[in-house]
Image (cartoon, rainbow, N blue to C red; front, side, top):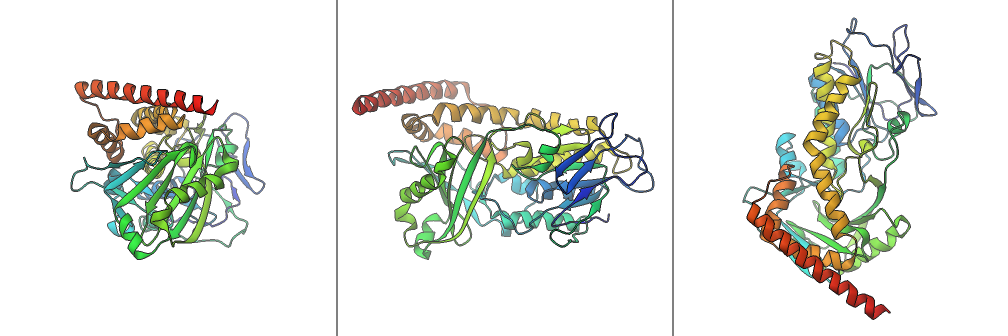
Length: 435
C-alpha cells in the first residue's frame, strides 16, 4: 500500500463529493489553525481503493498502529512533526513486549535483573531475587525504539516519504488514530476532556566507565519528599550513560529542585558525570474521559494510558496502537469497507477488559504508599518480601494482575498493616518533634 509520512501535517479532508462528518451535520474538527479533520457519511463499501487511515504521532503507539494497518491492507499515513524527537522517559519495557512485538535484542541497551528501592532515610532494598534466568526488564532509548517501529512499519507496507517542515498539505482519509501524546491536538479536536498530568524531568548523564559498571544490569528508584511529593526519582542505565529523572503532579513548579535532590541522593555513584541531554515532558495520570468519537480514536499517552505508581507507558502505548489498528483492519475487512464508531469501540472494550484492573491496583498503591515519608518507608520495607517481589515482577513482566496464594496474601496483608502502623507511629513522633 502506498502512503505518506510527513514531518509537518496541515489538513485532512475526504476526497469524495460528499463531506465527511460524524453526525447529521457536517462538522470540521480543528486540530489547530492549519489542521482540520472532516468526518464523513457512512458507506458500507470503499469504492475503487482501500480504506485510508491517518495516524497522528510517530511514537510507540503510532509506529505499532502503522505496522498493523499496513499489514492489514489499509492505506496508511503516519504523521510526525519531529522524527528525531524523544521524550523524557525512563525507557523500561517489560519482557512480554520483547516477545509480543518481536523486538531485536540489539535495540535493548541493558537487561536489568536487579533493582534497588531506596527509602527516604536511604534504606536500600534489593529487588529481583525472584527473577528466573531468562527474565529481565529491558532498557531502551526512545529515539532508537521509536525509529525502529516506524522503519518496520515502512517495510510492511507504508511509504516513508517526508515533506518539508511547515509545508502545507491536504490529505484525504476515512479514519484517524490520535497517537500524538499528552498534549494531543486530536484529543482536543474531539473534546476528549482534560486529565491530571505529571511533569517528568530527566537528564542523561555520561559517567566514568568504572562507575557505569555498577549500573551494568541495575536500576535504582528513590522515594521521598525530597525527590518528589507524589512520585519517585530514578537512575536507569542506558547504552553508555544513565538516565536520572523524577516527576510530580502536585508541585510542577518545583521539578528542578526535585531533580537536584535526585542527583544528590545518587551523588556518590554518578560523581564525575557530565550531563549530555536534558528532557522534560508532561505525562498523563489517568485515561481521558473520552477516547473515541466517530471514526477518531485515541491511543497511548493521547488516551492517557500511563500507570500511576510506576509511571509506565511504553508498552501500553504500543499495545493500544496495535489493538486499535486491529479493530480497524477487522471492521473494514482488510480495507474493503468503511469503519464506524462501533468498530473502533471494540478496541476500547477489549482494552478496558484486559488492563483496567492493572490501572486500578496501581492507583490504590500510589494513594496508600506515596502520601508521606513514613508511608514510603513502609512501602520499601514491604518490597523486601520475596512474595511481594514475585507478584510485582510477574505482573509487570507479563502485564497481568497475577492471582495470589491465599495464605501468602493473608500474611502479606498482616505485614502491610504492620508496616503502615509503624509508619503512622513514626509520623506521629516526627510531628511531635516539629511542634
